[in-house]
Length: 380
Image (cartoon, rainbow, N blue to C red; front, side, top):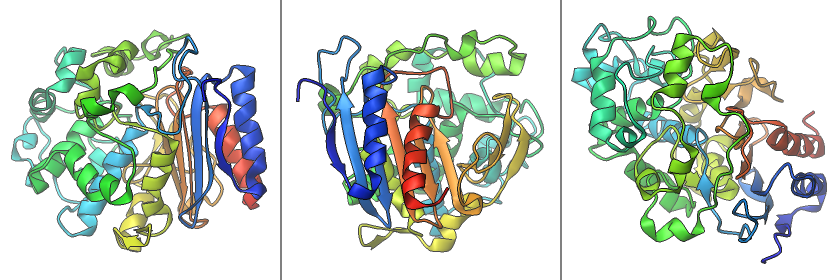
């Protein structure tokens, strides 16, 4: 509908989530957004509304998709977990077992688990790079393989905001012979019919909503250390790049994924339901639970806040108090997108929007929707 009104389905029990979603749009907190929640693999809320552009000329439709920035990391992590569950990837093995060139400059003992948990000491590139270099897989990965870590692996978390996708993705490529985006599409997205892409075909461009930049950029915040500046300013986050074919078509598995709340929630049913989604077993329950194994915790050297990382996901505590903390994981994207997964309650809660806030792990729009769900489910 052209008026931007809220569309979709909400089971009666979760009506408060729809009310909250509508309020976010009415108040102007959101311009366009989607929200989806699943319980036991069943969609109980699936909403979309508002506008796909800042000028409010294009309604946010059922199949509108958008760049979700770091929520993409959870898709990358799930792909690695899937390959590990098959026995083809050992998280405790040195990265160099799969990617020999990576051993350079003192990294022979860096483990795959360090890549998954943002503790490999490779939070950014030491060499100056451009946004266009992010579209060059060979350049982005070979530079990381050649450089020395900024800190000893495993000793502290330090958010690998852009580099993580190249690091994990190259390990996946070395094992499977296919790009991360291809493995994700063939093994996860297509079997589920999930509208999420790491490397968007040009045929889907017309459905992409426009990101509306936040008032303050990540690189503009005061009090940044040199390490923080390296992550946020080399190459720097150019939100207008998400409108280009170069960005959309490239595989940037830490920040370049395109989808909506429905697809984000659908994919993570695999983890929430112990490996089963839409009646198909993708992984063992033990393989899913690997994501919950604490790898590192402490003051994050990049985020400047307490972090707790499992294998590819943030864990409850640290910056994010969650219900059922021992079975819950999450991550969010720059601007506000968010995914919450609870293996005990078998739930996924996903929020995707176009009006960005200057935040990297969700904000009160997505959390407010989650709290409405948790209240209705009786988990808080």
